[in-house]
Length: 369
Image 1 (cartoon, rainbow, N blue to C red):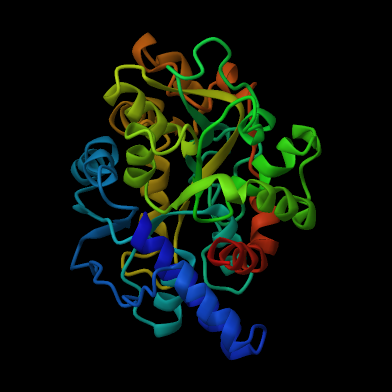
Image 2: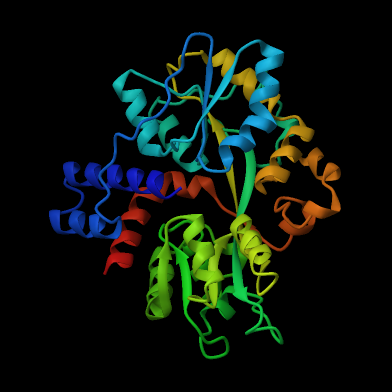
């Protein structure tokens, strides 16, 4: 997700500069944090005649979506599905709408970003006469994007070094005396703000609305111990696998991969994890039309198909009925199961819809400073 994340951040910074919300110095600080990334116009697929284009985040997600969803829908609907891994960021979706040349029919997108765009008239409201709310985890059937899967931000740690007393909370993550060594965190604010507040003693059920001043004060406290802020899942794995960091805030899917790669020398826990939803999104003016897009979304709600995605990608099902179909081999990866969710807090997409631009600007400045 690295290039997609950078592209979206750069678009946010450019907007802020043009609006006069930030000065040129802050803008340049943001560019430093992003590595002066400039490939905003990255190539992405355009829908062809009779074709449905589904945008996701690339890499392993492309074949996973193809096998779990696209192939079967294409056969049943008589409409071939193409998976485009260009990355449906907030900025990219907005740019397509504003250009009048929408290329993606269905997007795998952040619900907070989707709501912000939907409130500006850029995103279709979900047709819940077609999409079944009963097949979505309670609380995640959003106006503009029903949840399609879940992932979690978790604590990964050096299991050899901390075998006798592994970390069990974000307070432990911040405790560099009891748990010496470098840390790594995401180069975006998602999950990091919540972790900082829980480390500072805020109860999980009292996190939102996030107290940004308190969160950033706690993040600054840990900053001298951060070896690197990772901006891709592969980088987060490398930092833990090579021992550059003793602990890291990682996506649970990547934490599980590095645990496998190291034969258990690196492990991870759901304790105080932050579970986030991704959601299906339809940009207004999509080539295939709203009706076909909604039919695709409804097709993907089948619990067996969501288990297929879990087995291929590690993503937790959005349909509660899917959990009963998960084999013992994959139960640990099922972050949205009642057992695993009980250890975590659910990310509040409503808060991110209202505050993400401001939080991102501040977080980039902190990372670069």
